[in-house]
Image (cartoon, rainbow, N blue to C red; front, side):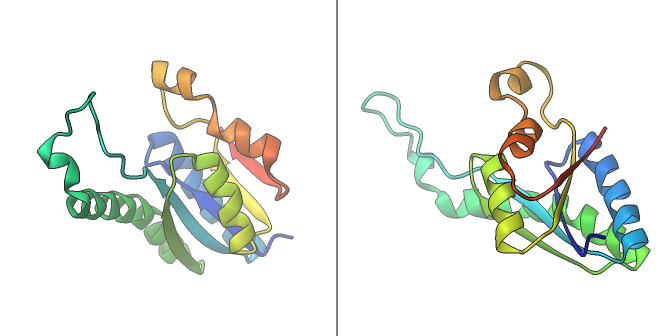
Length: 147
């Protein structure tokens, strides 16, 4: 069976439901979990030759990013702790979540990726495409998709 499961989250309600099921699955198979969040990278907004003065506040951006990551990863940590499942959580700054998920599975030697079927909704989801589909088609690590 599986020994180490990567559980990515984007903070969506569907992701929260997948986390609950991933923890149950890990508990039943005796696996440990690595919770994962891919945070957006800092981008300097430039409008022609104008750069807004607040654009240089990378420290504030990084603090906010860390707070958001911690909030989303805490959901995984709490669920795992309550179920008695070993868990560690990590986050990276990467604007390509699917690539970050695949890389994290390799780096942490996970033998399964357990993720929600969709994250972003509406027009943004259509424009960005399905990160889950990208993981499914590019990952060499098995992927379990929760609907």
